[in-house]
Image 1 (cartoon, rainbow, N blue to C red):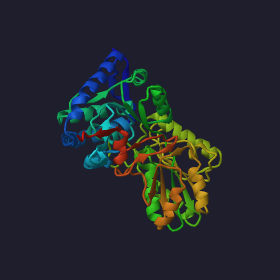
Image 2: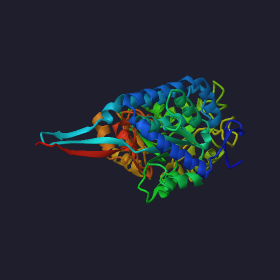
Image 3: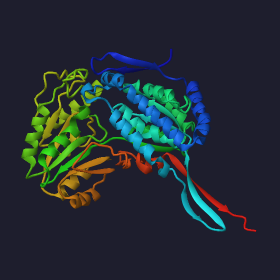
Image 4: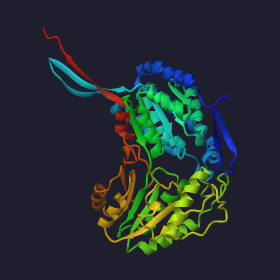
Length: 460
């Protein structure tokens, strides 16, 4: 038996699932099958591809009663939240709805002499490397539009959510998507690197750590294979003096703590105007004190364990370092905090940007709150980060939010909301958050290439 991948459940540290990785030879054959099958798939009518993909999406939904507890076992999200099918379906449905227009030929002009237009051509084989924190929604962001556009897809899912790719492949195959057109694979890092370097894929989409994204780009160097990445984040919230205070507290703290803080666009630092600061902190502390940490299979649990002990260890280290440097913690250790994956959610004040908890990605249930006196000060703090995924602005003034948003180095500007992915907008980032863009019309453009036609007519 070869190398095994193991999903260790954060509930109790037991091995929940394990799978053997493909050998280098088997992985190459898998990619070759995808390439061969893609030609016939791309030749099918667009509406047929849309219908098959959406049937696969519905089949995933039919599994939801099994999927929800499975996710709790694999990555710790409480069952009370019902899984990811709502967002999974919303994103796929939107991409299906806009496909005809997004993939339509671009007419440049036609007269008696010439016909000119630009077509959108599928890349060929798209390699999707998906993360564990929202394993269904992050995967479908690329899987659905890539298949609809006429690509074959090879999906490699995170070890922490080992069974997700199998579930998706099972559902899509049962719905009529050919097995070689959409494949789930288990790969080692070395084989993954060799496949990319060997040009087995025509486009790579990676969601994960900055180090993982750098590894993907290094593997693809010199191959001219496109690489799209969504990497780390340190997303800020800014509460202006005219904000709806209760709504800001409820949304920003939920954005910081939901899924045990393990959200790509989770709120990791909050800046509050001095006139609202004390009230904001007091209300935020009361919200977090009301959480119930516990086994995610328990319907009463509102915050489960982090997906892995090592993730919780990093958050504990950031908190401890900050407190040692003068930060003030506001939440006493919960009785259920076991020093392992079960971690007390924490609010910190008296924080500065010299502390790692305000600079490095935490990806856990902790948020630092700072007082500011002006937009200028808040903008400076928000931009003082190596990351740029989303920023959440709280004000009653749309024009002010737009002006502030124009000056923030970020991929998405939210006003009076946070931690949401609108499939009609491009999901993108800047700086160390990565490059590229998913969903929206731009998502289709990134999953295809332009091909120009300049056709001269015979006139005599």
